Image (cartoon, rainbow, N blue to C red; front, side):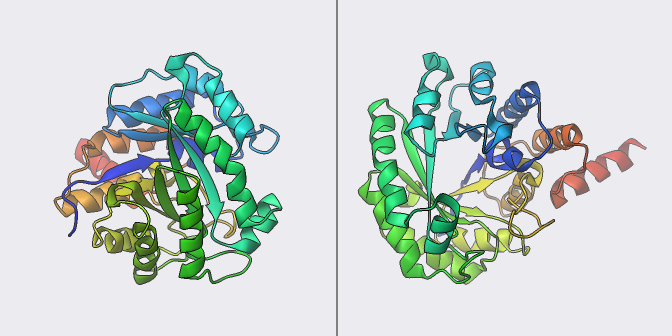
Length: 308
């Protein structure tokens, strides 16, 4: 049942960098995307078209999309939380537009009310015209169900609540459904159960997992989902991205760690580990800190010892 090949969606340039308080130059963001695609990543979440008032780090979204040297076979996605964001993403020349957009809805009613001041159903109703408009322009729509394994406000999130959001996303016509452990509290059997609910409504190739490593469970959760045959996962180069609900905690699982595990299992990714480590070292250097990735740090140390 475990797949022989896995696709990784690197969300570092968007989900990772948007958590950074220090401004990151547009040129460095573009260079990171270039390094990721050179390492073999074929799915990259580049930026988000949101108000710079709320996410100043993404204010250069159009400039980043315009500057990327696109490679055939690579899908470039962006987050567009509303119609205004989608229209902004479509404004550029055809070669600067995204291949895919991402919309998200919480599985937790408390999270939805607290963060966007509306119910889950209202939030997803707002996405319906965004989905239709994107698909009319030939753009794939990926949905993320956030807080699927736990909420910072209400705590437990039931599997029925997860499936309810999955069903609502299906009703508005999204192409792909990702299940996200936003605060990293999920454990393997729970992760499996949540993904199984998504698999009731979407085909295997259109379901993915997004796990944060706040409690050190991300790799175990990914392995559990591999046992279901799930073959797509979100990861973040160098472990970019913190967890805003657990101060100082690790956020997105590091791409290097996931690739190390997958390659060790004989699973193909199409990713060059050495080039990937270089990409992680590059962006970590830009940010002035070592990579969060354990595999990245270990391989960099191994290189240093070999060169000494």
